[in-house]
Image (cartoon, rainbow, N blue to C red; front, side, top):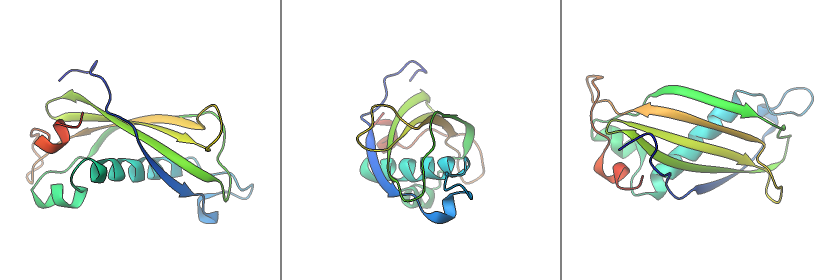
Length: 137
């Protein structure tokens, strides 16, 4: 596994912007995009064969060790939003998820970003990514 590895097929998750996610101007508060990244990541895991809960029950967690977002245009209250999530291996114990947040039908994403995660065991020590995750990236 290398940092230059190709990304997995993107998985798409739809949500609708809730009022609680916006400021007084009906613009999505910036930190909520990281919550949406988590929604996309969780659904990516589910669609590729297992759930995050099952992985934790098997003794493996994926804490975030790096996060980045580029805000290009705002999402607004009641917008229908699509989160496109793909993954790629960084090392045998690290995985990077890439995200694009779209308003369907538009030509450019509203926000792009990524998170990097390290696989750790129950004692917080680095361990290999689960085989079912590694086989999807």
